[in-house]
Length: 307
Image (cartoon, rainbow, N blue to C red):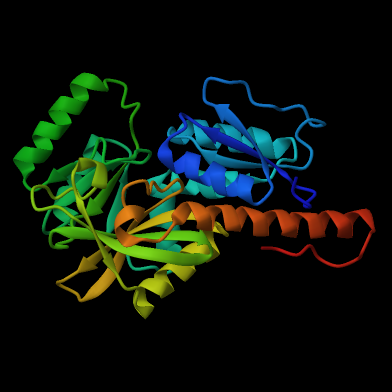
């Protein structure tokens, strides 16, 4: 049994995949008691039962992860990631606004609340743009718009499926000429632990589950600086930061941040054991929580320590 007061981990997930099995194995090797909580199971929201517990959220559904984080935090259970960071990571419009506010280079964007906004975007973006649902993952629902005809076709299809415009707003994002790859950086805590290209010769979409190949790269100062700014916005946690290299302007631009990066295939190529880093971060997190609990119990009049 762990010596830490916070010695229980509630591992929330959709199904126990290879990634979660490895995380569970490393957590148990550090002395933590790990309880699996599937999407189909009830959350343990009894405040007495959840004492000394940390929740690690690995749900595939963005809505499920956010819902569980919010409820668990209300009972006093610390969650990784926090509900605030998940709410940002699961909303591309929020991300774009925050990136602009904090001056992180990104593609130009418009938040479209109706079809007329999208038509206006056609004139705003010179070399085409990409339409993205504000909440989506794995490249689902994304469309590249090159011409007026392609936008008209997209609108016609959407009007027939979404008569009440319930799927708005959407994000209209400038198309960046990025070559045949994008870059994924995995952050654990506030440290970028690995970066790799996701290369696709067959599609402009570069998600690994769509067939993109992984090529490890070194992180330069520019990539590090972007990741540091992301951590200042979101707080420490577990993130997958997606970047483009803008060849026309010779700089990196952030595309989006994911709150639940997958790594079951990529880590076997780049060699960085992401699951081990996650378990170590949870251990550090538990130690900080214990210190803060002690300070509160003994009424020490100093600010809580943060991880």
